Image (cartoon, rainbow, N blue to C red; front, side, top):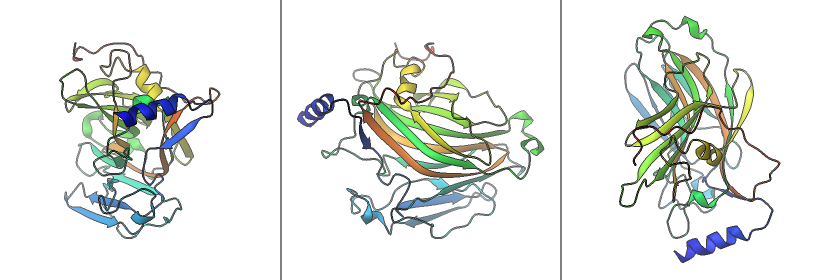
Length: 309
């Protein structure tokens, strides 16, 4: 408790200069300290490959306590490949999300992601082994670079699935919070969709999921195949706008903690190849008022009927 009080005072007295704190171990990623896994949607077979050769090069990372990161890089592909990763040693590593389920005779949702997860020790904690209280920071800035390869087949050529074909790239900000005194901790998700060429809108809006609450919305920047795009969002601003939809009664919840940051390719009967690099999650205080981040324009301010009283 004393540490939290001192930390808060230090932040309050920091002055006008922006102060940034990188919440992720191995942002980028830039070091070979990761785990890959892949499954075939046809055979349902799986394969895992771990490269922990550079974990010891990451400042503050305790290899003995958590020898590998859980990036959950899954290649939902019909022709998976494995082996060492190019880059690393402080140089950028590009993660390619290959989500190839077009015309394979299945209409199920298939997701491929690169994720920084708290259970996988990819997120920093305070020296007393407690997670950082996100509410003490003015901005939660998630950023990364994305390149969508031009598809070899038009999406219109994917047959079947009764019009439920889907192709998303979305940023998922997943956090813990406690809805009331004595309640169990629940997990909420904010999903911002940046790539939606089929214009699937059935899943947009707030809904319940796994005992928590989620909102899925189209938002900037819109990604275009063949163009490298820098994605940068302030998820605290997004949470403030949609706090009612997320059952927070118009406010930031008490003691929110990051559970996972995921960049997800989400397909139904479609195919996509997407390169992700330079992933970062900055907690910032005293932000520059001249620097702004886009917020989705989905309507806000309506309390879902399932929110607790």
